[in-house]
Image (cartoon, helix red, strand yellow):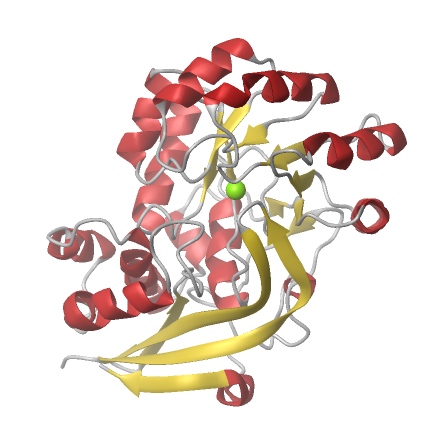
Length: 362
Ligand SMILES: [Mg+2]
């Protein structure tokens, strides 16, 4: 029997507005998907947001692609590899594809009776956690850093933007000369800004994330020769093939894996293995996900191959009340993946009904 695919578009306020070099987000608007077949319900979410500012995809494009081309490909709950083969005729739109590909990972791990992190194998059983802080006033940032250190976060990452980098980093390093600190530029610089980027070397950063264009590899390779701060790529890595090219030309020594950006879990697992083979570092990023998307990230971040702390904060950093009844808690800077089958979430339908602005079935 074929199954059905339900969707819920939800809108939830963020606990704290999140500012990056491309703008400020005050609420989370996301599509949640539910695949029902043979008595199993699997869940996932699209990591797209209101506008195409992180990448070219947004909620509207993802919904269009899923409705018009992808939904019909998952109703019989194929294996993720089969879905990837079927959906390959659609060029790009990785976030739309990932929303459904990950749904199938949840479905099949539930069917096997195992939690997702055990189903994929090679899990440490926990994930090291770092915090990602948006651009804020100096006092607020220092306060948030202290609170994060008190809670045990293993790495502090701050967003920077061109022209503000010194004002952001100088006070942090004055107060915290030795903490593991990294920065995320979200594509705000170009090679012509080399003199500014060179100045960041003095801050002894674990890495600078995505300083240059969202689809660039080559200029990052050029930049890497000029600065001593290691480069981490996020936006530029849209597949395992791109990751291989980036490592081949030495454009980065660190990769931030976001399953949504690379088309799902299958590709994410490939990138983690590739990085291990090439002696690069990897960690798992975040896209302000609800507890549903977050559960996938934590399972992935628990892989042995993932060696740096990820942006996999507990749910309460983002939402007062999440869509799940079993939010993650952090202990000594680590989070354990859910122990139930699949992504192990206890869905709070009351909350979904409260915050949904649209719903339907394919
Ligand atoms: Mg980033």
